[in-house]
Image (cartoon, rainbow, N blue to C red; front, side, top):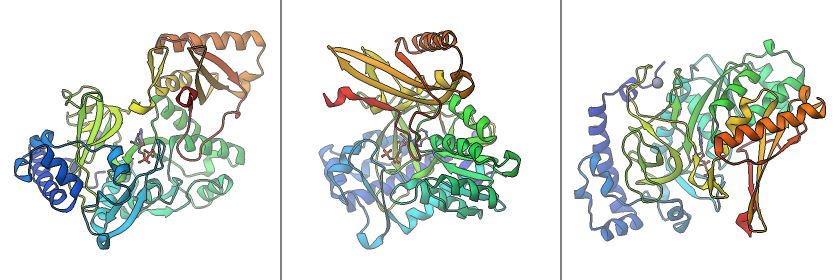
Length: 433
Ligand code: ADP
Ligand code: ZN
């Protein structure tokens, strides 16, 4: 099912025209209402008249997370405070939180794009959906909440935490959909098993997972543990929250709501545009928002864009899986390492649980690289020789995927700390030296 066929399946030429019109309006808005933007444009020697089509977007200055911090809390608003009806703040995974203000119109846009997501996941009016993203300043809970209400589904506004109750209500209320972070989905899978309630007694079929990077291998783990189909939902506070992008039933990329959020891929070092299909840093311009429109916002997320029409009939651009954030990339002994590479190796191996933790340090001027992995119950009790062999195979596989041999430590099942929101899987002690 498609929620908004006009927008999701528009031919590309018409879409670009529409994006041009919307961008022009947004540029005029920020130029006249937001001083930092006006100043920046003046410094670059451009005025709103220079922006006529979507191709002109490259003339505009970038916006970064730092700008949001520098103008904290309300310096980047383009609407008077009297028009702002809601505030959200980022979870601050990487530093001081940033604040975003929404007008009524912005909230309506958010509901609209969220409705596209949950419809694409196959959910509708008849379905009960448990929202186990945190409610509050974090956009996850309220974002998914508005989306499910918009499609007419029944919301269980559960929030995260309180695991036993999560499982009880999921069972008693017959939740068909579950929305949470992928790491919390794994946590709930274990809790479901512990509850002793047979899987057949749950109605759960579909998961809407996002807010943190997850690999294809992690998807398979979650799907088999929970017995559901797991979909990706993408978003970020600065742009709106969850609903910027979503997977369709073909799961060959995350469709972006590009009639609201115009995406570009640039070289993360130089800011130069990359060629279509090349990997780089994702950049968004909001082209319909009023409260706090952002132009060319550098997400720090690394991915690529796919412009071919999708089998589902949608023409909207798709983004590939997010490799990670530029800030997540570890440079260990000169080698670039993404936690997602470690994750895919660990999830491939039958004997391991999909839980891991990476420790990086520098001792005597040499980087140390340790990976803790959980062994499944049935293998943990194996004889020492077998465990040694398993360890060797993991090191070998990691060496061939990332080009480095970490010190692998096999640990007991359930000994690595679980996350109820965004998982923290890396401790890079070098940063504090
Ligand atoms: P914070 O930056 O504090 O984590 P947000 O909650 O706004 O604040 O997080 C947005 C970020 O979360 C995105 O830029 C991206 O890195 C990550 N993210 C969100 N959804 C996904 C997803 N489906 N896949 C991968 N990463 C995601
Ligand atoms: Zn599709």
